[in-house]
Length: 316
Image (cartoon, rainbow, N blue to C red; front, side, top):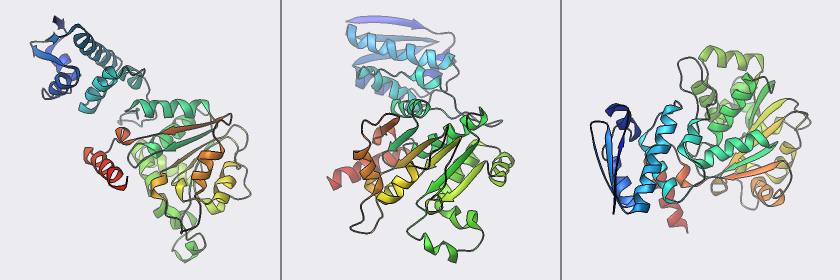
């Protein structure tokens, strides 16, 4: 058995590391097989040499993240434990170092899981990136954050947001308003992301100027998009022809992020998803990356993770 005592700057600093919730230490004890006791700014760890070493590494990782400006939440604390238990290469410190766009008075957008960090890195280093996985994993939100970050860095001149605006491509004419107003209901998640990350006035200005352009996928044919960041959302509902058309719109200094979930295809029976074809056809193509998310990457309400897992188990 090994017994060590770790001193921290202040009791509050230590409490911040486990999200000010002593019950989180129960997860540490259960997962790593150690006993943890804290008082007056110090922490005592007791257990096997290996277990104590892992627990100490968890607090070192969290301390580094905290000192780099990170905010530790219960999810982060538990993630740090799981990373240590499975010898993960990406640490909480790595996540805390990435800060994407944030307007005045708003927190910057940061990755919350190793897969989200890999997704951001893939977008930085590839021209075409597919973000694939269940709802709530941040596929669209992080893509929007990256797009706004690159726009503010002047690495792109505009952002194009598109989606297979429905089966009703032809029926858009029956909806009231101009083109932007017609497709707005289908692109609500992207609008929500814009309003989360930008001041209302700034976001509205970008939309009015065309710096951020909302367009249904059917209207992309024949265009060449240069110095643009393109986000194709809900791509599981593209046809094979639509997917190929969208991917071949890229012009000079542009990139595209394609997001989707193959378990939520709404196409008519017998119509093959363009996303499913792309997953097979583009494997190993230079400049193309695939990032797969799982239920472990869901960052919405914790019950969403349990719902997704329950459905997966039921359907299997």
